[in-house]
Length: 397
Image (cartoon, rainbow, N blue to C red; front, top):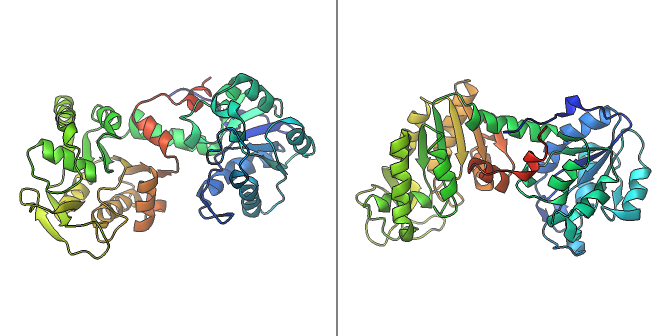
């Protein structure tokens, strides 16, 4: 991971500081329904305003594709941010031009403003230098605190960082430190848990992880493809049979690299995925025709928890069952609680990320017990895959 400048290295008093945030929060009927991303932005905003900076917040919202879409305005999000901050937050109805400049020029030291949706302009997603220069003209210093947008080479994440003195915000710094602790310089042994429905969406992730971790737990629907590759009849379960050979290649690579692959030994089955459906637990060699694997079984969950007890670092992406539908959340909840307890004891560094994973940890009530839980989705996954993140690379010193 590249070296980058942090806020404690910046002199911001009296300076106009452009903060790239991620205000792309869930909304319903004009109201923010989950303020997690806003709350995580607050430490950076407070650190800057306490030092007398004039803070200008930049963000995208949804996908207006270069056009003004009233339903995708950041104005209600700015209002929610102001409420969290307990202070007035001026809003500009554009992110460049006269209206943006008017709001920025009216700021006093320690003030915060929010500019309108970056993606109202095609130059944002095109990483257009001219658009980036218009943004840069509004500030003296650039701070990126949006790791969740760092996998996109956009004008506000990549081009602008090359036009102004660039720093990582506190949230970005915490994210990068956590990820480095997980894979670049981890305490060993390292376990990774990868769940989700399809191997095809996480093949790059699996191939990268088997070279970096000591134990790899594969769960969710994707485990069925690996079981099938080992000759297990998975009944009517979700299974990418066309990826059988690919799964075998992952298993072969893992063996060659000394990475232990942990697959379910027992599973919870039913004839349909719906709440309250009749279900049973069976070993993987006794799945009846017409049945679907919907969760790992209790013995498998206990095995993972026991294996975890011998590890020092955990990296988790994806639930191990169809956790949104009870009772197929039990395997994920059991492992989550075990990891949380080990973390509380100081025996484990636990790092998790991905939307479904965060939802599962919330459901287990253990999110705050993990060492770090990433609110980033695509960026977290691409980093785990070993890919370059343009928004991070642009901060390199």
